[in-house]
Image (cartoon, rainbow over the protein chains, first blue to last red):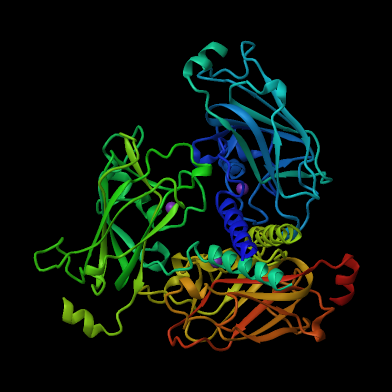
Length: 210
Length: 210
Length: 210
Ligand SMILES: [K+]
Ligand SMILES: [K+]
Ligand SMILES: [K+]
């Protein structure tokens, strides 16, 4: 009976976690939470040439880029494809945070048609942009947050802790550099990017740092 | 082995319930089932002034109000914000029913940025509007369906049974009065409202009552 | 302790399957995977007359027909309604495959308002259309893939293996004939159609067969 109660408990807890965006962890890069893509490398657009800056984009950000900041619900295709085997994405977070971990999610192996377009080697950095509208000025201190290899054999949503060296950094902008993928020469598909952490206790801390 | 079979059984049953809209219970306030928001208090619209009645609304109902009658899939932000710490919403159900229970859902604690905008004290009433287009005429009998306090420490979807005094009522319109929230002075976020019950066996019953 | 580990293992595996589109099986009829509805019988459109070919359609395919190739997430109403108690749908798959199984999904019993519109007897056939734009020419060999009865008492997503007689066929187009439904005289609701299988190892095989 104890074991029955235990089984039930495990089930309900794991389903609760699954229902809570899969990881039960706040995501400061979530589009509906107020985050946005501010920059990315050239997208891969089948049969549409290179004039995507015209109709499908705002300030150099493709209208579909937001897909990277939204759940995919296990569906192949709910991603944003970058051109080539490497690329980058810059995200303005919902608010300034002390980052703790990064999650990179691709589609699950069991439903994927082809996973050669999954990112492989990744390098994540972050900084406090604030109201500074000029891109990455010299005054900004850039933190290396994480470096990792996305492993096709592990769970499709992989979370990596932020490096100790950046454990007290405060950032509101995060850059994902995908330096290689799992084999596709034409494109690298980004299903979802998440940034976990907590808000600094006082605005004074932010002021001190910047 | 018995226990293994039992564990598997519990798991599959609970996942089935989760996959069935989380509660495995029909919702007569579901937008895709034909329900609609017919009235609500002033929405909270960041930086948009008070002229929302113009572009974003139809018959005094904001175009985003339907979000309250749709799943949120664990995403912060998939809600409709009412202005201030109290407010109300009126819903025309899919059809006339004998109401059994009410569910109020907010975002899960584990992924939320701030839950001070969650509703706290709620008062639910209902009536049979029928084809009567004039608002709440004297001829309509209004039933108090439930009064409850949304508890931030419990499951994020909380179901409350309809009061015994209303157990044989027939209603096609339900009003949610949120008389307080969990602390935010600026807005009260409504993620999802559900109304459970069953259809009366004959139309005669409706005719008798109205 | 062994049993506890086992319980946890079962839970995580089943949730993973649930998160992977419910079945953890690639679906070559998925809209976001590149499949599309190319033909269907007359839709059931409440109070909209028969002039749907005008505004709501492209090449005789209703704009909502794509709903049949997308997840429903347990929501009643996330379906495409065909007029009457029978009908058909033709789907161009993402790519040519050797088909292994067919899945027909209706809404779960626990959240449904009425399931008389569910399909009952179904006959699935397929062929290799290729670039041949003329409809079902004599040169095309049509394979009967499956015949089954959708059972309202079983799981809402029902998977049927392809007949042995078609086990080495290669198809890129699949036709679902719904020859009866579960009682509704007015319409038959199609929530989702899936086609499982694998890609042939070489294009030569396709060339040989066609
Ligand atoms: K996505
Ligand atoms: K919602
Ligand atoms: K669907």
